[in-house]
Image (cartoon, rainbow, N blue to C red; front, side):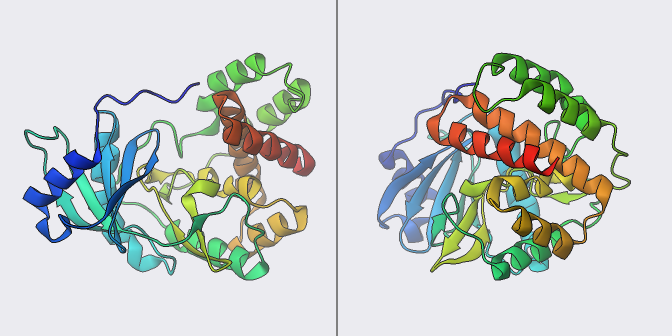
Length: 289
């Protein structure tokens, strides 16, 4: 599973042209590329803003979901979110919609040692987010879905990675099957859909924000709670999070399954930083099984 290639080329000159026409107040701001992810280019624009542009056609809907729904969800949460401040239009220079958003200052959480205050804050914010979603809420075919629908991908990745030192194929297969037998979610709630350390923002040693909401959808909150095994190294801290959230046993078991799925996906990516996180995630999953 390699990083998908961009379907369009974006550079500083293009971003500045778009701003000049569509949002001139930032046309003279200092611009630089912050990240080229799977779905979007993100450019910093001055001190307080960023510009997000889809790099693949499939990401256009995800960006539109952010534009429509994030302002509605934001009042529920105390954490900072990259709220859109301007929705850029498709045009001759760039064929898809794009966004100017608030920039959340800080760094990502790969090396953050979460204290109790941060654990409580994250759990409380996810609990506030995970409320029933309306019928018109976006659906995501890959996130928030019933866990058994992910079985083909899990089995394929287990087979590909069966010789990796961190993959106990038999144990992980047994655990996956057990998680899939857990009763499904009884309601569809709002979820972030892509909670991992690079989408969690730390500033001055404390949790302050959540970014990259393109996968937001209505679905099973277990998808989000899988972040417990991606973020928290110590079993006691994972327990503290789940108790603060108020997660019951079936939800925890499904979340464990989602963490297994995500750990394998990270491992299978082949990207060194993702492989390291995937290895750690699978170790934590097996420790809590």
